[in-house]
Length: 362
Image (cartoon, rainbow, N blue to C red):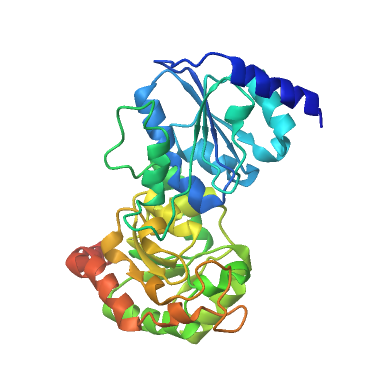
């Protein structure tokens, strides 16, 4: 690494006079987080495009999310794979090459402040103390980061992904490929992710919910998730004797977003998929235990969140110390089946006649 280059950049920045730009034309947004936090930052792109309509907005993100953002988020003009800029020297090289006039750094796990190294206008996201009281939702915190330069903000702030232009063909292909009947669809993230098992819910609880709602409503239940959740979703499917469809690991993120946009509701623990559903405008029932529903719950669906985080003793670790590894956390096991059924009825009950009409005339 050329440390002398970094040191010179630091002194150049610190010695330059401060100034404010009234308009920006080339904006770099950095968010190398997981898919959930990335989706929660898309209102930032919307707000920036609203305030600076002629600006080019570039997102530096994980490469696996590039197709999703470019194809469905109209506020982002370019995506750069963060793998190519995995150290400070390469990142400064990117800044020198692309010449942004505003950098918005939304990385919460990186304490590096680029303001030390560049004279470009720089805004840095600071993660709040989650236990200080009166904490805003993460999506709002991201927007607060750009409040020094923005005067207009989207209302509502979601949806931010718009699959309408490509959804019909892709959705029909998905239905045909997996023999999905022409009925309203309820999606569930019912699998156990080995990396975040404590955020999951018991497979027996999911099975009971599925048995109940397929009896009450003329619907299709689809299990969605990542490849590592496919096997645990198949266990749920076998427990209900095939009364649901297992799509876990079968759809890429773009097709999953399209599929979710055609669902009546998603039920999920704390996973990026629930933010994906919110971003395409689908109502989401969030099941929260180890993580905080008021901070990373499905935005705009606060009335549909079941939050047991006040009973959790393991907020600061990645697993539950009170249950076995690769099992749902004890706080998640406090969520009762009837609580989830009540939330589903809140969403579907008011539209029961409409759901039956869609099914009978489909």
